[in-house]
Length: 360
Image (cartoon, rainbow, N blue to C red; front, side, top):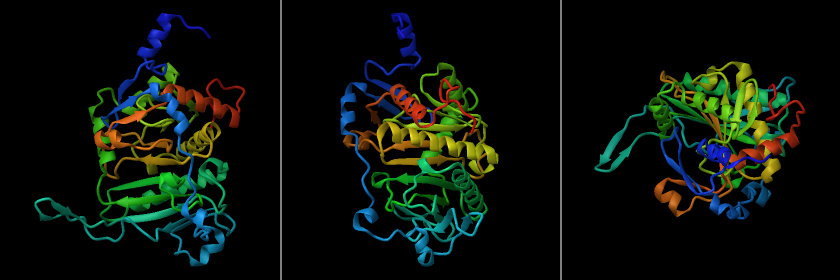
């Protein structure tokens, strides 16, 4: 479809086309600037392929497969109707946070401040099938995974001394996974981490109600960066994407806490995450990625809207990014959304849908 110069100019002003010149864009969640540098788009040829985890490279027996159940620590939670587990939650054998010591900050010197790393560190095994991924789980499995996440965060909230739960799924060695078997991690910690505190500050700064609700409404109106819309979630590449093919999945129902959302809403978000991971696989191949769930601290009462960040690991943070905290994105989110939308049409065709709109 041809567009005249005035239309093209308006689209660029509204963020509807990938910029023809490099741009700084402000991430309203974090308050940080990112650089969208599409002049460097030829560097897409340098995207990093997913590296195998050490257990795959060295032939180490998988600790999460059903045959290793006897040597695993006792499960904290098991989902499955017939005695054979479908989803399991285990204590992490190498926890970053453990124990119930009070969070007491001590000053050991002029610049030496410490506190106990108390808390909970758990492993969420997504499937007994070693070769599955979050992208390939069937509907029933996605429902069980999301139910397990909700249950464990509820358990964390009821544990004395904890303030926040972080849920993550790392796929591939570059994303931090040490074992190939599909799994996530659930961490209950005694403080609010900086990323969450910055997002809370972003919500506080925003004068138009809920920042994320406003972002969803604007994206659906403009219709440039939307990947998928369902009854329960909206999936899009945010205008302020700091990395190539960065995705945000937002529940339609406004709510601060994942574990207090409706069962159908939680499952709908899980299916939206699975769908966009399928699109990423179709468009980019089997790349490494991080899935990061952000929910408000347990006792937070200010405006917040839980959501899911999906971050493919395609590039490496170099000296500039590490030195300044300013990310350089070589793929405009407008192009990324278009690529992923087209890929999703191929893997989940819906003839009645203009933008892969579905009921989930």
